Amino acid sequence: MSKTNVPARGPLPKPAGPEEAREYLKESAFPAPDVQAVTMSGHEFTSLCPLTGQPDYGTISIEYTPGALCIESRALKYYLWSFREEGAFCEALAARIADDVVYAVAPTRVRVTLHQNARGGVTVTAVAERTV
Image (cartoon, rainbow, N blue to C red; front, side):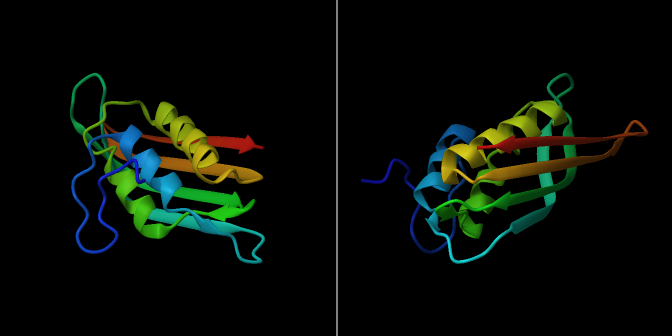
C-alpha cells in the first residue's frame, strides 16, 4: 500500500511537505541498472528564507553512486517541489536532501551541491556528501 497519495500517471498534486515527498521518492525508486554514477540537476530549485520568508532561487545537483536502487526523475521533481514553501538555510537544505537520498535509495555515495542565486548581493553554495 502506498504511503503517499501521488497518482502513478498524470499531473502531480502539490506536495503536502518534504516528509511526504521523501516517502514518494523512496516508493518510486527502481532497480539500478549497471551504471557507476548518476547525476541529476535542477535549475529551478526554490525555497524560502527562514528569516524573511522571501523566496530563494537556485540550482541543485545530486550526484550518486547507485547501490541496488536509482531515483526516479518524476519523484525527484515532486520531492524538490516540496521545498517551495519550506523556510530553511541553503546549508541545511543540502544536508537534508543528501540524507533523504540516502534514505530513499541507499547509494554507496552521494554528493548534493545546492547553489542559491544572489539576493542582497550574496550567493551561497553548500555541498553535502554522504558515504554509506
